[in-house]
Image (tube, rainbow, N blue to C red; front, side, top):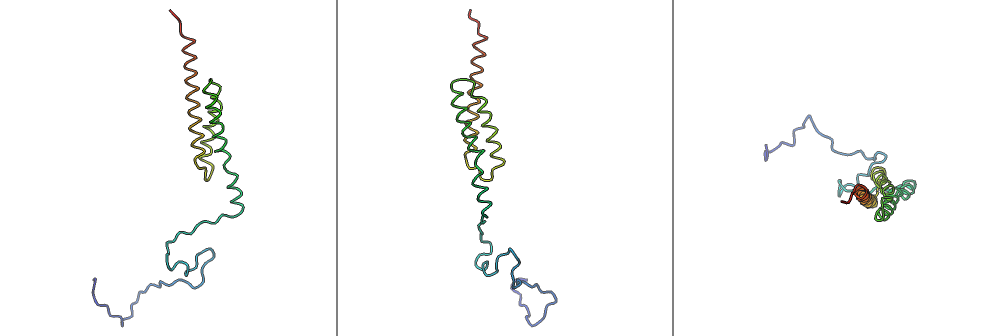
Length: 136
């Protein structure tokens, strides 16, 4: 019970050993570094190969943005921007899935690609309506 006096002279049969081994295991933090904050966040340190791989991994996002802007610009004047806009949407989805830190470029590529596709569909509807319009 709480507050009950415990006789410390009696030796208990069951005791937990709460001490850590003196030598840390490979890859484990030293006990002295965890005394002040055992739940402390330890930053991840990138290796040189990871840094070089990461620096070259923005290509899909950049390509999606470029194709989206070109597709949107061309779709303003006609339906010809639909292919570039569709490529931008596909590249943006691929960038979102495969790139580790894609940032916001894939989202801008997706938005401009979808806007270009919407403009292309509007152009198709306008042309279809003009072809089926019979005066009179």
